[in-house]
Image (cartoon, rainbow, N blue to C red; front, side):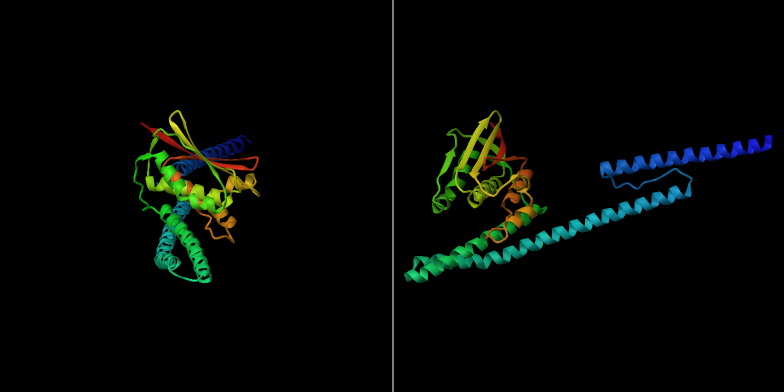
Length: 299
């Protein structure tokens, strides 16, 4: 009886030891997995365990990590190729369209009958819409690619904003709408890419014209070390869900179906602002939609 008790005790001790060793090995492996996931490390997992199943399990996890990394690299490669293809195709389309627009301008200035001029005007308008759409796709593909240049320099916010607003004077006139502009006389500078910032301002004004039904306001306010540029307009058929998702590429494009726009304007704004470390804020209150871009002021 004593012998049996001793044997049972030894067996229990062995199983207990194996259990604690297995638990220790699994705990160490779990810690390594979490560390790799948190740090996005590419290091191969190792184990000091003598348990064959633990060793095989570690090998399986390493295989899964390797497959994940390969899939990620393949996706990046395909995504980059797609962006480059879109950029190249857009560029190929822009060249003949530019020629068409040039000929339309010449025809509109020539001695044509009113009926013919009306037809040319329609062609010119549609060609411009197509040109803007292709330009959006071209710019978006370039901005999202790794080779998009960012040239940082001192930028006069007031002067740049005035220039961009002036470019849209005829658009506001065509809509028979007035715009409330509030820009200080003092010079306010920031560090940014002037072309990228110009595109941000331009796209935000285009968005006002496209979705707004009046109440257009553009304001530049200086608060401590920041410049707040707000673009405000009245809207209809816009709820909080629209506002929360308005910068999403797929959602914006879905909203644009059936129109002459790509729906990429605000997605481009978001990406450029991110590249330039400028902050964006937006709100919807009492059918007033406002987007605000915040720039750091430099002396």
